[in-house]
Image 1 (cartoon, rainbow, N blue to C red):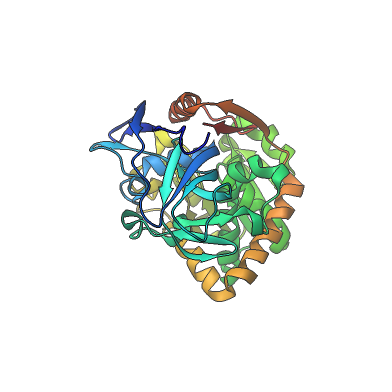
Image 2 (image 1 turned 90 degrees about the vertical axis):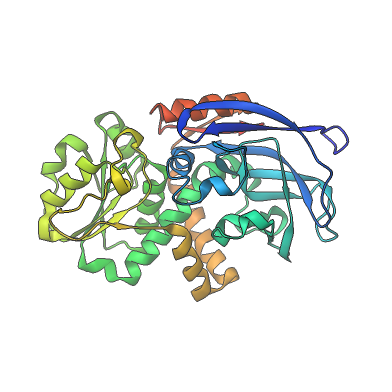
Length: 367
């Protein structure tokens, strides 16, 4: 669709106080501002990660990236877009980018800090948030881009990056003296990312996956874990010096891990909240547990320090190498399901809010 044909933008608006209420809303496209670029959104994936963005939206400012009317919010997605109109001399119509996008058909951005590999959206309301989310990659010069694996990148990429930076952090702390890492919600994309990077970069650490009984076979099938246990079999885990990385956000499960390992738990890391119905106050970070105090891991902050240490180019190469290793090992562990239109995005989001997440399927929406 050319710029002249796109008369309106369609967005999915979610009620912040009742996430199961979501509606398609159409508004006219306003004239493009000076220095701005209009993106037509080609594709994005809807994963449990996006549910986390909605659940913790106010606390972590995830609702602030793409403004919506009072009481409503637009959930951010990771995906691909094409420039259909440009008032920025450095960015040409037809160029494709990858980055943080709204659940919508279009987005206007104001490119700044432009280089061959990408740019940052300088729109005023996005500046208080982490720069990680405001950076767009220009696909023509991107070491991670593989035209044949765009779907996998949207599904796994952002979560994989979190796994990458968790491994980097743990290695910098010598894994707190642990010999094994216990990952809850082991079927989740972030857990799989961490397991893959640890397999590549921390081979001395045993990887133990904890998952629901119904997902045990799927998790074993990924080949990323040394051992996989159902949640009910937590008591069978070998008690040795361990770190836990909790992706589930289930207070009862977290307490179970702490009680099982006691002083053998050397570090308790909290990431995300995939078990939405059971997340306790503060991601299930209950007080009064034996062992170390559960500590929230906010990936964007760790990213900023990782790139400060290694620089954008070298850091980018390190992350890309681990990413290609992950794709080789587990990139085909999910079946890609492509759905057309924003209504299917709305329906998928509501399905996931209702707790229906099939780890064996990766959903890509083409608005």
